[in-house]
Length: 386
Image (cartoon, rainbow, N blue to C red; front, side):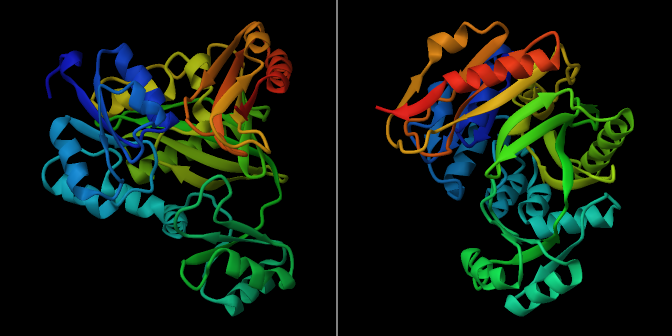
């Protein structure tokens, strides 16, 4: 590949907000981007140099995309690994690769891979049918978490089983007769934390600060950095994240979501091989954002500093309940008056309840000040429909 930045062409599978934010960073470096997405009005479509409107499982269109760029990456992991393998066999560069995605896509296989490399995780077991879920409940004690091995995000594909009576409803809800399922022992955590790592083609790894996350209805609500944890917890979390990164050897950003238990233990919950919602704070909060480092990694450039500039709080902006249709953003003027605040609206053409429509980030001299301002902004800005 030519070392001239302007000659680099990056293909992105997926044109949502993550793709859009990757393109923002690529554009700063003069890098050509082309996306593939089934929606002609996707958020990234307005910024990319070119786009292909096609389904994510359309192998012919994926080949067409690969032929027009130097390297392919993706904004989400649920892509046909068979199609990606076809591209790799034709000599195209794909990051993350089909082998990594085939493991991470299946959450049970992901857990097994982590277990095989002695990464600390909670207890889990594969289940087939209602009776095996009952056995898991007897072994782990209630509550237990029933999960779909495939698909699922923002809590979709999960069901908290509180007692024996919940099992049949949970099995039916997750369509256990059609989908592979597994059970996790419930972890009474103290905090939810995450660490972003970025790995270059040459194997260089950089690690971002530990982020503390708050979820509501299984959707990320707020990310605070630095995390309010002990030095030992911080060291352990960073070490575990680096070990996970080494296990999968994925090029680009990998996000390691973890639980800090009430006994001070850190357990890995899930791994995502791409830029992550809990890393949006890095755009304003760090020297090099997760999106810039991801682009740097996949095109073979040196990785940038991950140092935190100032304490930072990120809050998601979700579609308000009771509204669906063309989005309208309320409270913009008042919100933008808040010092240290940056507003990101993704440009989705339809809002609906709890859909991720944007986010806001506040940087401040102290984390407490950033939290106060983020709370103030969160009460002002609303996404409704016209």
